[in-house]
Image (cartoon, rainbow, N blue to C red; front, side):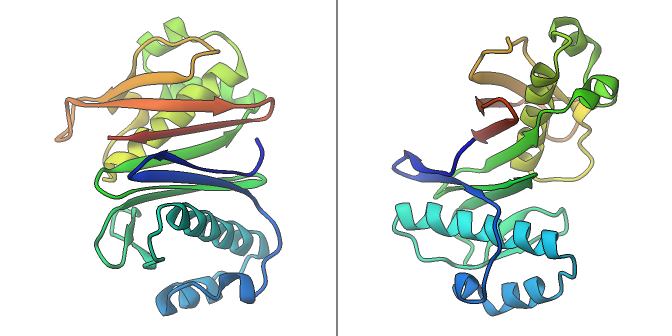
Length: 209
Protein backbone atom coordinates (compact mmCIF):
# COMPACT_ATOMS: atom_id res chain seq x y z
CA UNK A 1 0.00 0.00 0.00
CA UNK A 2 1.35 3.38 -0.98
CA UNK A 3 0.25 6.88 -0.11
CA UNK A 4 -3.10 7.39 -1.81
CA UNK A 5 -5.58 10.21 -2.11
CA UNK A 6 -8.60 10.32 -4.36
CA UNK A 7 -12.24 11.09 -4.83
CA UNK A 8 -14.67 8.18 -4.60
CA UNK A 9 -17.41 10.32 -6.13
CA UNK A 10 -18.37 14.00 -6.13
CA UNK A 11 -19.40 13.83 -2.47
CA UNK A 12 -16.69 11.63 -0.96
CA UNK A 13 -12.94 11.09 -0.83
CA UNK A 14 -10.37 9.01 1.00
CA UNK A 15 -6.68 9.29 1.77
CA UNK A 16 -4.01 6.84 2.91
CA UNK A 17 -0.76 8.17 4.34
CA UNK A 18 2.49 6.65 5.55
CA UNK A 19 2.95 7.35 9.26
CA UNK A 20 5.99 9.60 9.73
CA UNK A 21 7.40 12.05 12.25
CA UNK A 22 5.31 15.23 12.53
CA UNK A 23 6.23 18.79 13.42
CA UNK A 24 4.02 21.41 15.07
CA UNK A 25 3.79 23.16 11.71
CA UNK A 26 2.38 19.99 10.12
CA UNK A 27 -0.56 20.12 12.54
CA UNK A 28 -1.27 23.85 12.60
CA UNK A 29 -4.64 23.20 10.94
CA UNK A 30 -6.03 21.33 13.99
CA UNK A 31 -8.78 22.90 16.06
CA UNK A 32 -7.94 24.12 19.57
CA UNK A 33 -9.77 21.14 21.04
CA UNK A 34 -7.81 18.72 18.85
CA UNK A 35 -4.50 20.35 19.75
CA UNK A 36 -5.33 19.73 23.42
CA UNK A 37 -6.13 16.09 22.65
CA UNK A 38 -2.87 15.72 20.74
CA UNK A 39 -0.87 17.28 23.59
CA UNK A 40 -2.40 14.78 26.03
CA UNK A 41 -1.13 11.76 24.07
CA UNK A 42 2.03 10.63 25.83
CA UNK A 43 3.17 7.74 23.63
CA UNK A 44 5.29 8.96 20.67
CA UNK A 45 4.00 6.34 18.21
CA UNK A 46 0.40 7.01 19.21
CA UNK A 47 0.95 10.72 18.58
CA UNK A 48 2.23 9.99 15.07
CA UNK A 49 -0.73 7.70 14.33
CA UNK A 50 -3.27 10.22 15.61
CA UNK A 51 -1.68 13.14 13.78
CA UNK A 52 -1.24 11.29 10.49
CA UNK A 53 -4.91 10.24 10.50
CA UNK A 54 -5.86 13.94 10.82
CA UNK A 55 -3.53 14.81 7.95
CA UNK A 56 -5.26 12.12 5.88
CA UNK A 57 -8.73 13.57 6.49
CA UNK A 58 -7.38 17.06 5.78
CA UNK A 59 -6.19 15.92 2.35
CA UNK A 60 -9.48 14.16 1.62
CA UNK A 61 -11.38 17.33 2.52
CA UNK A 62 -9.11 19.47 0.35
CA UNK A 63 -9.99 17.29 -2.65
CA UNK A 64 -13.65 18.10 -2.01
CA UNK A 65 -12.81 21.78 -1.38
CA UNK A 66 -14.20 21.57 2.15
CA UNK A 67 -12.54 23.57 4.97
CA UNK A 68 -11.21 21.47 7.83
CA UNK A 69 -13.86 21.70 10.61
CA UNK A 70 -12.13 19.81 13.41
CA UNK A 71 -13.43 16.51 14.74
CA UNK A 72 -14.55 15.04 18.06
CA UNK A 73 -15.49 11.58 19.32
CA UNK A 74 -18.92 10.77 20.73
CA UNK A 75 -19.69 8.41 23.62
CA UNK A 76 -19.40 5.43 21.26
CA UNK A 77 -15.92 6.45 20.10
CA UNK A 78 -17.09 7.53 16.63
CA UNK A 79 -15.61 10.69 15.10
CA UNK A 80 -17.83 13.56 13.94
CA UNK A 81 -17.17 16.94 12.30
CA UNK A 82 -17.43 19.75 14.86
CA UNK A 83 -19.70 21.73 12.54
CA UNK A 84 -22.15 18.84 12.26
CA UNK A 85 -21.76 18.58 8.48
CA UNK A 86 -20.80 15.33 6.79
CA UNK A 87 -19.51 11.96 7.99
CA UNK A 88 -15.97 10.79 8.70
CA UNK A 89 -14.09 7.62 9.64
CA UNK A 90 -10.43 7.28 10.61
CA UNK A 91 -8.10 4.31 11.01
CA UNK A 92 -4.45 3.45 11.49
CA UNK A 93 -2.32 0.33 11.59
CA UNK A 94 1.36 -0.45 11.45
CA UNK A 95 2.93 2.05 9.05
CA UNK A 96 -0.24 3.68 7.72
CA UNK A 97 -3.17 5.92 8.61
CA UNK A 98 -6.27 6.47 6.49
CA UNK A 99 -9.47 8.49 6.46
CA UNK A 100 -12.71 8.72 4.49
CA UNK A 101 -15.29 11.54 4.30
CA UNK A 102 -18.75 11.86 2.74
CA UNK A 103 -20.89 14.97 2.59
CA UNK A 104 -24.20 13.18 3.25
CA UNK A 105 -23.82 9.45 4.04
CA UNK A 106 -22.27 7.42 6.91
CA UNK A 107 -18.86 5.92 6.13
CA UNK A 108 -16.44 3.43 7.61
CA UNK A 109 -12.79 2.62 6.91
CA UNK A 110 -10.26 0.13 8.29
CA UNK A 111 -6.70 -1.00 7.60
CA UNK A 112 -5.10 -4.17 8.90
CA UNK A 113 -1.71 -5.85 8.65
CA UNK A 114 -1.91 -9.42 7.32
CA UNK A 115 -0.66 -11.69 10.11
CA UNK A 116 -0.52 -15.48 10.48
CA UNK A 117 -1.94 -15.36 14.01
CA UNK A 118 -5.35 -14.28 12.73
CA UNK A 119 -6.00 -17.91 11.74
CA UNK A 120 -5.85 -18.89 15.43
CA UNK A 121 -8.44 -16.32 16.53
CA UNK A 122 -10.91 -16.58 13.68
CA UNK A 123 -13.58 -18.18 15.85
CA UNK A 124 -13.63 -15.03 18.01
CA UNK A 125 -14.99 -12.82 15.23
CA UNK A 126 -16.32 -15.18 12.54
CA UNK A 127 -19.68 -16.92 12.40
CA UNK A 128 -19.83 -20.64 11.54
CA UNK A 129 -21.10 -19.88 8.03
CA UNK A 130 -18.11 -17.58 7.44
CA UNK A 131 -15.61 -20.16 8.68
CA UNK A 132 -17.12 -22.57 6.15
CA UNK A 133 -16.32 -20.44 3.09
CA UNK A 134 -13.07 -18.76 4.14
CA UNK A 135 -9.84 -20.35 2.98
CA UNK A 136 -7.28 -21.06 5.70
CA UNK A 137 -5.12 -18.16 4.58
CA UNK A 138 -4.20 -15.05 6.62
CA UNK A 139 -5.14 -12.59 3.86
CA UNK A 140 -8.63 -14.07 3.42
CA UNK A 141 -9.26 -13.97 7.18
CA UNK A 142 -7.89 -10.42 7.38
CA UNK A 143 -10.27 -9.31 4.63
CA UNK A 144 -13.17 -10.62 6.73
CA UNK A 145 -11.87 -9.00 9.93
CA UNK A 146 -11.31 -5.66 8.23
CA UNK A 147 -14.68 -5.70 6.44
CA UNK A 148 -16.44 -6.31 9.76
CA UNK A 149 -14.47 -3.50 11.43
CA UNK A 150 -15.45 -1.15 8.60
CA UNK A 151 -19.14 -2.05 8.99
CA UNK A 152 -18.86 -1.64 12.77
CA UNK A 153 -17.28 1.80 12.38
CA UNK A 154 -19.89 2.85 9.85
CA UNK A 155 -22.85 2.00 12.08
CA UNK A 156 -21.06 3.70 14.94
CA UNK A 157 -22.73 2.25 18.04
CA UNK A 158 -21.43 0.05 20.84
CA UNK A 159 -23.04 -3.29 21.60
CA UNK A 160 -22.60 -4.80 18.13
CA UNK A 161 -20.56 -8.03 18.09
CA UNK A 162 -18.37 -8.79 15.08
CA UNK A 163 -19.18 -12.49 15.35
CA UNK A 164 -22.79 -12.44 16.49
CA UNK A 165 -24.19 -9.36 14.74
CA UNK A 166 -22.18 -8.71 11.56
CA UNK A 167 -22.59 -11.39 8.89
CA UNK A 168 -20.66 -11.48 5.62
CA UNK A 169 -21.79 -13.12 2.39
CA UNK A 170 -19.31 -15.58 0.82
CA UNK A 171 -16.40 -13.91 -0.99
CA UNK A 172 -13.13 -15.03 -2.51
CA UNK A 173 -9.57 -14.03 -1.56
CA UNK A 174 -9.23 -11.96 -4.76
CA UNK A 175 -12.60 -10.19 -4.54
CA UNK A 176 -12.67 -6.40 -4.28
CA UNK A 177 -16.24 -6.19 -2.92
CA UNK A 178 -17.64 -7.80 0.23
CA UNK A 179 -21.34 -7.71 1.08
CA UNK A 180 -22.44 -7.83 4.70
CA UNK A 181 -25.25 -6.99 7.07
CA UNK A 182 -25.99 -6.31 10.70
CA UNK A 183 -28.59 -8.58 12.32
CA UNK A 184 -29.86 -9.46 15.75
CA UNK A 185 -29.67 -5.90 17.12
CA UNK A 186 -31.60 -2.63 16.92
CA UNK A 187 -29.66 -2.01 13.70
CA UNK A 188 -30.78 -5.23 12.00
CA UNK A 189 -31.28 -5.28 8.24
CA UNK A 190 -28.58 -2.68 7.71
CA UNK A 191 -26.85 -3.92 4.53
CA UNK A 192 -23.37 -2.82 3.43
CA UNK A 193 -21.09 -3.08 0.40
CA UNK A 194 -17.45 -2.96 1.46
CA UNK A 195 -14.69 -2.11 -1.01
CA UNK A 196 -11.40 -3.98 -0.60
CA UNK A 197 -7.85 -3.04 -1.62
CA UNK A 198 -4.76 -5.03 -0.71
CA UNK A 199 -1.08 -5.59 -1.24
CA UNK A 200 1.32 -8.19 0.13
CA UNK A 201 1.19 -6.88 3.70
CA UNK A 202 -1.99 -4.81 4.25
CA UNK A 203 -5.74 -4.88 3.71
CA UNK A 204 -7.75 -1.66 3.26
CA UNK A 205 -11.54 -1.72 3.39
CA UNK A 206 -14.13 1.06 3.27
CA UNK A 207 -17.86 1.50 2.86
CA UNK A 208 -20.46 4.22 2.23
CA UNK A 209 -23.88 3.35 3.60
